Length: 358
Image (cartoon, rainbow, N blue to C red; front, side, top):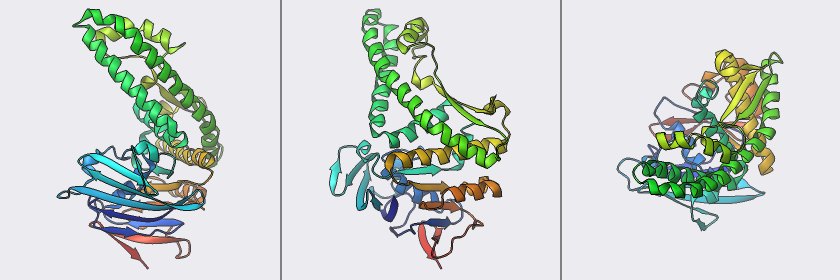
């Protein structure tokens, strides 16, 4: 999978843009707040997901503009494809190969990419929310139907939580709670199955990468940690009194976690900063590996100002593993891996203007 070209108008701080990247390594340099991450974000949106920075769609439109327009030409499934997107009034509209799409979920699985940014380095030390988000984002690209399943679960969870609060004022509503419990169990158990299945594929690849990075000094072990024992229906019955008191659902995949251990020790508590970064690096490479298996082709890789957070040995390992893929690498300074002209491209981003460098 390769990006052939990107055009953008009215997107973030980017000046009207026509970008034709190299099929190998693309190094994009510039000072902070010049638009480097915005460029990656514009391409990332075509995966069908939300901004990897957590921005609302309305924030993606340049100040003073009514709308943003972006278009991506990419090579996938042995043919050139085009996707267009308009962002206006906080709403995204997209088309693929000239066919309008009803929602962004219909783009999922068409353009596949992996993003690695400094924020991901907190996957080990951070809370369960970050690890669930990592798992769900990766799953959405591998299994496009997962996005719809996850949306149904979140809707049902929100409805159940609202009902729990309403029951405090209207006791007669208690009889309707089993209806929402049944739906929550149906979707929740499906989510747990999907997550477990993904980790079964993901974990051996991540472990192999970690072994390569650490030179066999430790083992990376990943496992799924549900927030409940037994089945979800039983857990909801047991927690009903507490849920009614708090107005929130205390059991379900929205409370689950991924355990990260190094040679049997909890990485969150005992891993050094270097070990944490090695674990995250191994996990991001495994994400790309599983995505490649599922898509039948290598995904595009975005490295957003992440090399500066890795030492020379980890930088070398990362770039060696990504050789042969199309990579977009941003940073404030030139890395020690400036590509030769035949192997990649060098670009400068300055105040929203992207210029190729000879």
